[in-house]
Amino acid sequence: MFEQQPKTLQQKVKTLATESIHQQNPSGWFETLYAEANRDWNQVPWAKNTAHPYLQDWLETYPPQAKGNSALVIGCGLGDDAETLANIGYQVTAFDIAPTAIAWCKQRFPESSVTYLVADLFDLEAAWQYRFDLVYECRNLQALPLNVRSQAIRAIAPLVAENGTLLMITRCGDNNTVPEGPPWPLSDGELSQFEELGLKEIRRDSFLEGDEIIVKQLRIEYRRHV
Image (cartoon, rainbow, N blue to C red):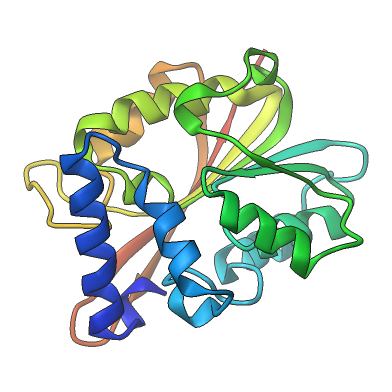
């Protein structure tokens, strides 16, 4: 996880993100990071070479109805979470803004049933609105600066179908503190915007990570009711 990465890699991420923000392209640094990793997943701070443990725990603790249902993985990275959802029966679409990440996914999983696409969260297909039974967002929002956070939330919420679920994993921070980043933890005020956009929080699990610095992580399940 990010907190456990070498300091040099953390600094690289912050430098790339800062440069992208100054260029008014807050998500542009992801492609640079993946390209410079040169197929070494250890150079990607959030890569685990397996599904995220909080996703695995959710699937075991609250088993969803997967077979025949659709799922969308936002910012899919190297594809491990998308493959896990496909393996239990979801029809999975997974996208990332970084072409190198998507090419890497296709190389890792050449026989995959997942539809891997290059796409921009801020410019998604209109046909995706209210389409997916499960939308999975893992730590992408926290990698975006605060000035585009609400725009990103407004892009994510309408992707959830009627009676569908949004599953989100993120750092949680203080409403009154402007955090240093990346990552920039989400505040409760920001999280409340999902309910303003028609989703209802039905479950929240908290986790603590880190040794010297303890970081609160949340796994939140939202539902869109008819």
